Each structure stands twice: as C-alpha cells, then as structure tokens.
Amino acid sequence: MTLYGLCGIYQIINKVNGHKFVGSSVDIGHRFAVHRVELNRGEHHSPYLQRAWIKYGADNFELTVLLECDTSELIKHEQYFIDTLHPDYNMCKVAGSSLGVKHTPEVCEKMGNSRRGKPLSEAHKKAISQGNIGRTKTPEQIENHRNALLGFKHTDETKVKLSAVRKGKPVAPEHKARYKTMNLGKVRTPEMRERISRGKREANAKKRIESQLEVGQCQLC
Image (cartoon, rainbow, N blue to C red):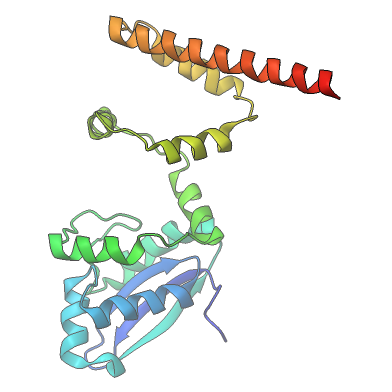
C-alpha cells in the first residue's frame, strides 16, 4: 500500500528500544520523506528523535500508520494517540502546536532556505485553511503583527501583482462592515490625509486618461 496521498496518523518507531514519534499529515508518504530528509541533514525539529536517529541509524526506524481519517479529524485523533502512547520523541504534547519548540538561529536559517520559493500543494493549502478556521488572534498577536509591518513597503513589482489579483473582485458585504468598524474613531494625521487625497487624484487622472484614449480610438475606427 502506498503511503503517498494517505491522510491520517502515523508513528516513527525505534526498533531497538520501542521509543516512538507520533504525527499526523494529509499526505503521510510525503511527510515521512520530509522527516527523513531533515533527520539526515541534522535539522529535525525534535532533538530527541534527531539524537536517536544519529545514534541508532536510519535502518533501525520504521513508519507505521496508526489510523486513516479525514483532514478535519487529524488534530483530534493525533491528540488521542499522543495522550495514549506517550511518545518519547515528541517535544510538543499538544497536537497541532509548536509550544515548547525553540529552534536555533542556524536551524531557522536552514529551514527558511530549504522552503523559500517552493509552492505549497493544494492539499497543504487546504490543511492550513481548515486549521485556521475558528482561530482568533489575541490583542498581543495583533499588536506584534502590526509592529512587524511598520515601515514595510512593497516593491513596485509586488504592487502591480497585487493590483492584478484584486482587480475586478467584488468586496464581500461582511468585509466592508468589518473594515468600517475597524476604522471607526481613527484619527488620520495630516500626512495620511494628504497621501490618501493624492492617491485618489492620481487614480481619477488615470481613469480620465484611459477614458480619453478609448474615445480617441473609437474616433479613429
């Protein structure tokens, strides 16, 4: 049975001492391949599993599937097996969480370089989307996110791409209502007002030019 495309809960077992690592994935075959690559590079997020992999060797570990399930039930079942099996190599005792995991700067850099530029699969995107359903950010998280974006500016190329993606897409009523609520009571600085006014003037001027060009083209026809 191929494990690629199989959604469910798995465990990586040390055949020498029986210690194990429990995880879940929408594609167990792909996830295990990623585990092997990270372990062979010495970059795995679990130092317990990493040290054991180096000590006992790859041949002394095997993957077994504990349960096949739907994507929506992954976290629930993974938590059940973590609570039941008490896996020795799991740093996080809460399914779907990275609490307690602290990567070194070198590992963070390696992980960032290995993932940079790689597009996410549709299954991965779906899993991320479903995992975020119902989640709300704390005021502290919102403030940290806002501070991280202070002074950030998109490149002209990125602005063009964003504009092309959004062009022609209607704004949902709930989005309009939320945006209106967020801006209630906000006081704009003179600089902000001038920037907004200038942006509107430039947009209107662009529309007039496009309109004049269309009229001129029609007259030439």
